[in-house]
Length: 446
Image (cartoon, rainbow, N blue to C red; front, side, top):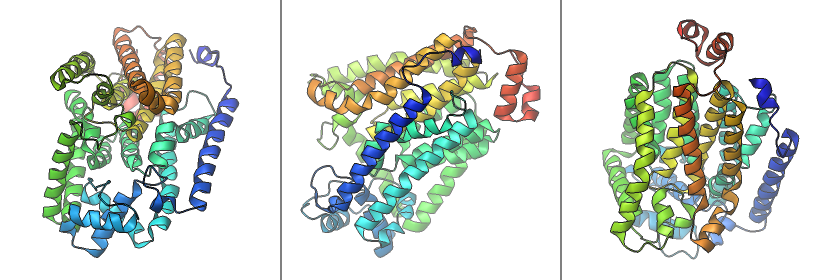
């Protein structure tokens, strides 16, 4: 089967694709460096700016450094600090809505001037993201043998990371690394540690909207036990550094923010969101009841198919688990309460898992279709915001939904045995690479 994969024709060779990714990185990173070098962009521009979202995390760290922890979610204090740090601002555009343990991470940076802290943060972020990608690629493999560096370069030049996470100075790499470590630990046969790593995603609970139900329905109880233990540690840490009152304040802020996301408040720019609700918000649907009804109708079909896949899960071979994870992560972006572009980096582990599963369990035709979808996932974000602004249509929501649909088709084909199963020897080698030799000996092969 592997020789068929290598024979698949591509419009670009691996070397050409690598050069293209590195060129994108060089142009964007060089432009950002020049922009920062010729002016304090972080502090003066009233609109979108390089590293502009970092100020909310800087303020949180400064509050813990200079004030009592129970004032972490004091909006009046946040507004005073925001207007002090960003000249020309008269109101709080970026409130801090993350748990106290996130604020703790920014205490060291908050001791630096804002510009210096922003530059340090912009330097650390791609390193963390590259480390997470390397962890996934080294564990689950890369489709093109010997070209793992292409995978890392492609991820770093992925528009949701490059433009929205890195240049926007968001912290979605925390959730990405949490998922990456969780996937690798589960694959190594350490579900409790997997759950503990996954608990870090509690910094933004919507990331777990579909993941937790999937773990429950597929009976991954040791992962859930680790998740509960990790969540307890994070809650105790938050209470210790900021006090119980701040923890209650975070819960209240999350409830308020979730309710606000369902309204056309003007604080959420639908051009930069890819969830189903934001997709419909761009369309000329003025009646809120009709919009809610359409959302329910469009969401029910993939939800039922995904639920059916969870119920059929038997963990008889690694490909089942990898494809279910990939489908769950992808549909979690589409069906979520709100999904900004910077959270779309969660589709990267979905792509790695899907490619890994398809490489060992499906024919070259399946693999070719998966490759086309991944190419669309990479290219579409570069023009999605422009398209959404001019046509009032967010194409990336459609691309994500199409990718999620393909993954569900692959899951169904795998259960029906439509793919190209590996020989027993190949399957055993695959399992021993995945979960350890001891468990591979007892795993049935097909």
